[in-house]
Length: 186
Image (cartoon, one colour):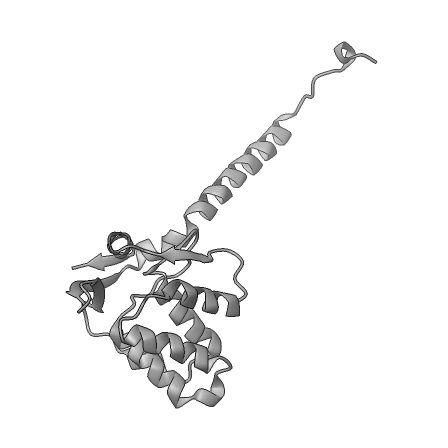
C-alpha cells in the first residue's frame, strides 16, 4: 500500500462536534491556568494606605496599612495551626520577593506581623517550627527585610513547594508596582 492509496480520515458531525468541544475545553483550561493566580486577587483586592519612610542609613522603606480597621485577632486567632501561620507568612512575603509564581497575597503590615508573633509566642507548644516563624517575624517587626527571599523559601520548603521559589528581593520600585497591582492603594 502506498501513500497515495491511503484514504483521508472522514469524521461525521458528532465526531466533529466532540473534537470541537474538546479543543475549546483545552484552550479554556490553558487560559484559566494562566490567569488563575490573579483571579482571586483582582476580585478581592484589599484597601491599603502606602507610606514611605527613610531609615537612618538612607534606605527607603515601604510600609502599608489597612485603610479600614482590620480585626487581626479575628484574622489570626490564637487557634491558628502550623499551616495557617505558614500561609500567612508566605503570602505576606510575596510583597517583597521575586518569584516566577506567587499564589495568595496578604498585605505585609506591622499589625499583622505583631499579631502573628503574639499567636506563635502564646502557643509555642502547638507549633513545630515556632523558632523559624519567630526569627522571621521578629526581623520583619524591625523592618529588616534583607533576608526576606530566604524567609520566603524557608516557609515555601516547609510547605513542600515545587513552583515559585524566591529568586531575589524586589527593588523599591518593583514593590510599589506589586502593591499597586494586588492591593487598592489609597
